[in-house]
Image (tube, rainbow, N blue to C red):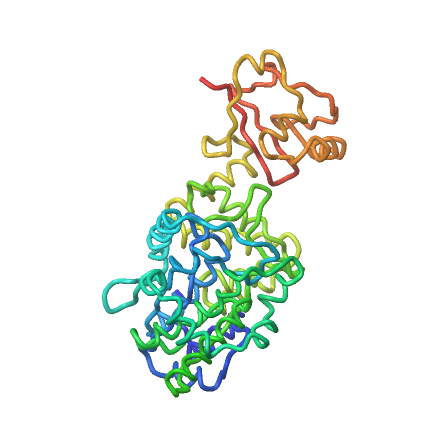
Length: 416
């Protein structure tokens, strides 16, 4: 297990693993973190009922910092979640009810414990609804709003991206609220450092500046980390069916494993550094692999990330399932499955329609291209007829295994 060695300071570890992006004063942050026990926070807005891969990289940073002896505060945005962060958005976030936000906050609390110890004295989870929901608007404008320049706020990237389509006043308030979060954590919990993705830079600066102006102290600092991007600069964590969720009810463990097993060759080493605790010396050995041998690094990545989120037993099961499908050519009960009515199979269902229904193709047009290119097989036999009709005659051992390309499989069975 990575123990932040041979680095003397956690900043060195974060830098060596590729996390660091921007800092208000890196030398000051390094000096601050020379001694254990620094209280720091990362914010998570509960916009869904599960954390996803984008959150996972921040969870890893919480864990690295805690292992270095510092005190993590996970700030859940039960208050700011009612507004929605405009950072990285070109559209207005969906406004959620208080009940929806509260439910999501509760789910986040559960999932945070996967990597971080929030027991007494080790860390804490805080909901900013505690101080935001009962704010007096006039007092807030006077006590916080007076420190902000509208001209300066409009230069923030978070707002620039929204100006073309129209920045709402409710979104414009978000920066003030996040800055106030840092101020409250600084005052109430002696929190001296905020971390977040580099799309949060403007918000983090605002919090550091607010603390300096209101307290006269200059000991609060901010640090941003790189987002999880692929080699083409596009955010990772999306599939044809949506986000890569950490909740197995929203994304089956096998599908989660396969997502990491299938990352691009150019991204696997970066993911090993950011999303596992493997020692950097071991990762360096994987970095030497070329050609088909890179698959060994991908297998290790998929296993390690799945083990962190879902536990070793489920990671081994996913690994075994992948082996049985891709090496031995066998089916598995855990494979993503679609049930069809017996009457549908007796009458027959068009292959293109079935590809769309199972999610193996987004449209009949995409399905047609896949078939024409020889990319679809039924129970191991390639089908090149776009007008092919799937019937009960295609069942083998009461199931049909549809394979798209080399890596995607789907199981079709008759509903009982």
